[in-house]
Length: 401
Image 1 (tube, rainbow, N blue to C red):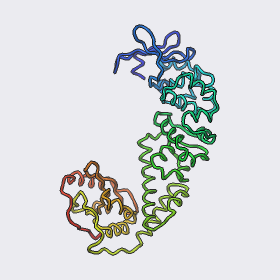
Image 2: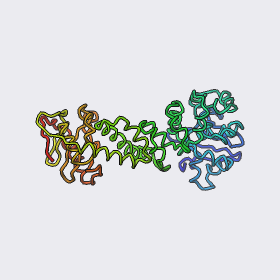
Image 3: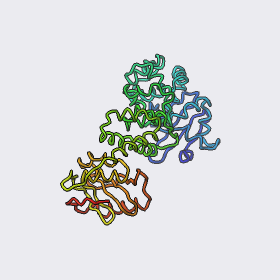
Image 4: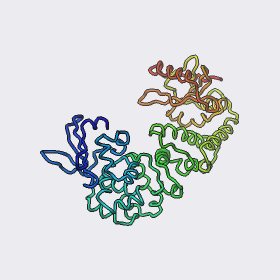
């Protein structure tokens, strides 16, 4: 908001007026709290009401400004208790403030069920519901409000919604929350959680296998994580879960998903994964000519990297490296991924996948799934970059470790 503060003013009436010159030439204002906190746009010599939200999280921006800044002075006109409550809702923030300034039933709902109030306001704006219809819903029982927003009539869902912990109340969080409320079968496993972090809902939406797991319920999410950080962390946890299921298939374990769901923490999932992997790798496999051959890989090897070209060699790699690479057999047979044995600078197993016809590194695993050194990763990336346009290897040159 430092840019806006150069073109803004807080009037004697307590309104916040902003003149934009870039990216468009426009003038708009927020009315004071006492005047109903309306959004207005200057056009043809007069102010016109705006039904939407200019998209400025005013409260977040104001906290970094000096008290003399026009925006800071304007925000000070909002009751302190309201500022504190609304600060956690970035999406449609000024729209939320407008309803709270004008409608006592909205304030009452927000005091007792803020998530539901926010959902109703966002949904009403999204669906362009008449203001009179939204105002009428504010006077309705909470279960009826939830039904209007999601089609679900459930007191348990209303109670669960009250336990959802938002991070910043972004638009993405709003859509994740609605996704679960619209799918009661997804929300049902979370009904009895004492607290429901929005990050957990995001993880369940992207990785539904984790939905019923105790390890997700007990996971300590960080409110400071960005979406990219959250995805990186949860992808790592999910990879062990998925690989454990693949290994269990090789062992004919029919209740593997249930066993994983009973794990208290993700560290227990990893322990179970390693235990099952050891059982697979303890089996004796004979590498023989005429074995089960895999599709031709997209990259030839080099002096340090060799393709794994048969089912038998894949299982031997898993046994030697003490990890679950043998469970990737179906993906390799289907041509979804290709596996390589690396000797230097570290002994490693490499997974390559193709994207738009171009080979890309998927992962590198050392023995016991340990992470490689930076020099190892650099060597693999250099190999892929150098050889990605070469003719695929035509023959079966399986290597004995």
